[in-house]
Length: 195
Image (cartoon, rainbow, N blue to C red; front, side, top):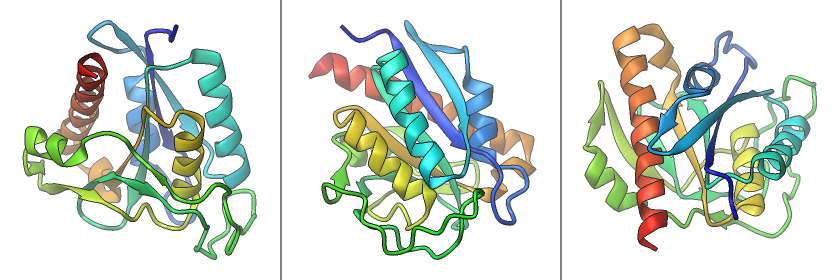
C-alpha cells in the first residue's frame, strides 16, 4: 500500500537562473498537507544524472500517491505538461557541466495519465497574470529528462508543471502559483479516489 504522501519537486539554480522559483515553491510546500496527504517538497539539482537518480530515490523512499515536478520556463504561461519526450534536444550543459544533447532516454515518449484538460477547466483560465494551459512539449533540457524519469518510475501518478521564471518577482503571484500547485495535488488525489 502506498504511503499517504505526495512528492513535489522543483529545481535549483542553473545558467542565468540565480533563484529558481520552482525550487522555492517545492521547499515552501514541504511539510504542508492537502487533505490527509503530506507534501514532501524537495529541490533537485539541475543535473541530468542527479535529478533522475533523486526521482528514483524519492519514489522508493516515500512510495507517494502522486509526484508533481515543477520547473521554470521562459514562456509567460503555466503549463501542465502531458508528454515527456524520449530524447534530450538542448545543448545547454547542466550544473555539472554535462551535455546530453541527442541522448535517448529509453522506452520512448511518456505521457501523463491525468485528465489535464478537465483540470484546466476546473482551475480557471489564469493564475495571477499568467494563462494556464496543457502542453505537449516539456522542452529538451533537464525538465524533460526528469519528467521522463518520473513517468517511468511512477507512470500512473506523475505530472510536470512549468511556471514562468518571473513568478519569483512578486509575492502575490508567487503565493497564487503555490496555491495552484496545491489545487493540482487536490485534483490528483480526488481523481485517484474516483478511479
